[in-house]
Length: 172
Image 1 (tube, rainbow, N blue to C red):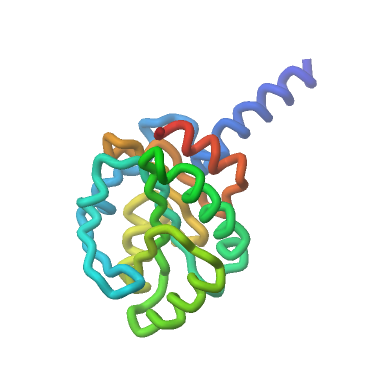
Image 2: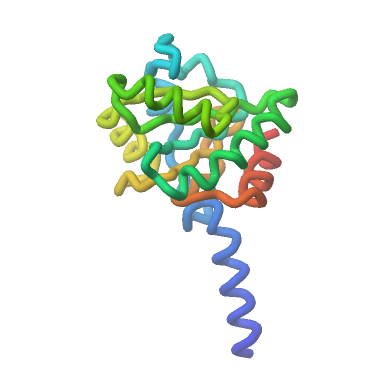
């Protein structure tokens, strides 16, 4: 009986892991704060995030100094290359101030970040993370948003390649 309970407990935790511990969809945060903002691209072009509505999105908050962020970036780039033809948009939100734009661009080039990069500013990025289910503003933090604009999964901490594949399958 103990083995059965342990197996059931492990399965429940595994199912909730991708959702950051929230296994029920109704506990997912709203994507509305994301779509309501404007941010600048790494190339200093304004982008209304509402223009991304209707697309399957992986939104990843990261910073250059974040070790786990550096670890997952190559996998995000690989997922972008693999699924962009199916409509997937990967958005990297750099938790950096605009004054660090050149450093962010250099970092992105060195890490071959081939997906959409935004610079939200530290304050705006932190507020957005908090509004979308990350009250402590830990990094990395990832939201998985379907074509209907609904957050279907969230993850605080680095995502494994298997986590990314599973998340992408939910929204394509």
